[in-house]
Amino acid sequence: MNIEQLRADTPGVEQLIHFNNAGAALMPDPVIEVMTRHLQLEARIGGYEAAGQQSVEVENVYEDIGRLINARPEEIAVIENATRAWDMAFYSLPLRPGDVVLTSTTEYAGNYIPYLQLKQQRGIEIRVIPNDEQGQVSLPALRDMLGDDRVALVSLPVIATNGGPVQPIEQIGALARAAGVLFLLDACQGVGQMPIDVQKIGCHMLAATSRKYLRGPRGMGFLYVEKTLCENLEPAFLDLHAASLLTPDTFKIRGDARRFENWECNVAAKLGMGAAARYALAQGIEPMWQRIQRLSAHLRNRLADVPGVTPQDMGAIKSGIVTFTCQNAGAAHVKDWLAGQEKRINVTTSTFRSTMLDMQQRDLLEVSRASLHAYNTEAEIDAMVNALLRMPRS
Ligand SMILES: Cc1ncc(COP(=O)(O)O)c(C=O)c1O
Image (cartoon, rainbow, N blue to C red; front, side, top):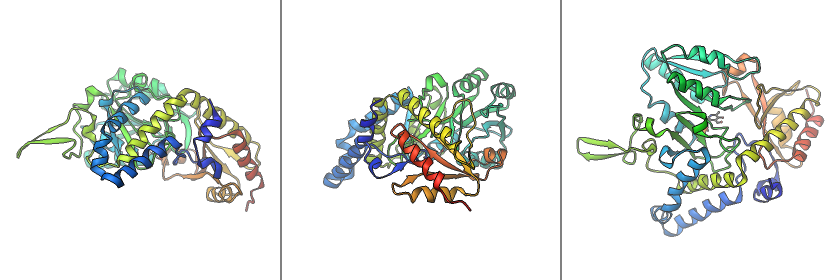
């Protein structure tokens, strides 16, 4: 990888050390340029007219996202964030009383709350797949749980918001397929960070966001729904883009995944997400993933040398999201201390409210989170570790 070019494309790295890529990564120039150009076009000729003039580029976004995850353009819906994309898939499933949803301890609260809502409203059951000794989903346990024919859905994140293991999603997908059970994958922290290939994974639905490891703009995301499934899923919400009126009494839902979209959308951000996908593909997802893993292993090793600091990630394969706790220093203090360095260092805090099952199981209330991307460097990591060595504690 050409790291110098990667950094030259990323204006933010001049100002700061950005280790909050799991929150929102720094956008590279090609993304900023596409969006700025479109906003200027909107200002000059009008929003609808600008979208019309850019209709080919807008269509290409579906191709670009499709290439990123090895899906067909008609299997992609562009939706304003990962949560809403995930919701559109989840709430369209015909789950009935007694149906079982299998999830992981690493599930994100934004997804877990909808399970609870459907538990209250429809009487579905939530079962949590236990972890193996390394901390990821136990595949033998999943195989056993799939033996119950009330299981209607496997749904979990590939990488949790608070780090931890990279789940064995290809094996999970194969087990779900073999059992004839739908698999909804939350790839919010995976897309842009690691290879995500829906054919290899065998997931039926996948939700992701633009602003995190993909390095696109905020307020943008997408949903993948496998073509054969799509036609059988009726979205919980419809509008005049997702469906059309045929007569005053009848309507028809469109056939492709855009049935999960709504009409109004931030076109500049949509184009920006397409540019981010092209940018990621041009860098090469596999080399970026290798580099992210190398950098994060370096950070975990160095953190282990800081007195009172405990790296907290589990799993046979770990991601670029590095979490740790600090004796006599809360996560907010760590964040503020690092932000106050001469060259600002952005890390964040992750609390039990986002990933309650996992945090409760590990008896943690909060962790500090430093999430690394391929444009970060070992020198930046060393600067953070040195700042932690100097950090006053109570
Ligand atoms: C694992 C996971 N899933 C879903 C989301 C929600 O993404 P969005 O904020 O784009 O809706 C997040 C955000 O942090 C996440 O980490």
